[in-house]
Image (cartoon, rainbow, N blue to C red):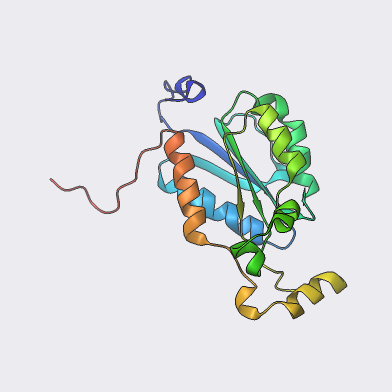
Length: 193
């Protein structure tokens, strides 16, 4: 078991407390964070999911932090969380995720696409703090675009490519995190004798 988590083994409830914090501009990343939180909860973890703007890493055993990516940058609330909580994150198991690519960029990213999809400064800083992993999930175009750029993106992208989130991939990644945290598999239905 993870040494950080082992220190909580005397907890009478025996549940690992996980914070899933996110920064989302149009709700897509928030929905990804909620799916991650739901999957972790299904593995017996005590999970809180909330905006990075309203979060801190106090009183938790692990953290997952995610943000939408725009032009290779995370949104400010997630960047601020990473900076403000860096001392705590050094001593906690934590993972990060990014969301944003859609359409063909999500399915078959070129090197140029990756340059804009991966927040290299964030990944570098997180690695300095001991991040366990980073993943990029497909995103979704805004349902109600704001401004010329978003409206053009929606107009110029075929409808079937507006949402590139792969829910099976998201749940599988969350399951891997749960397994690394030593979570137990929850069994559906009544116990058999």
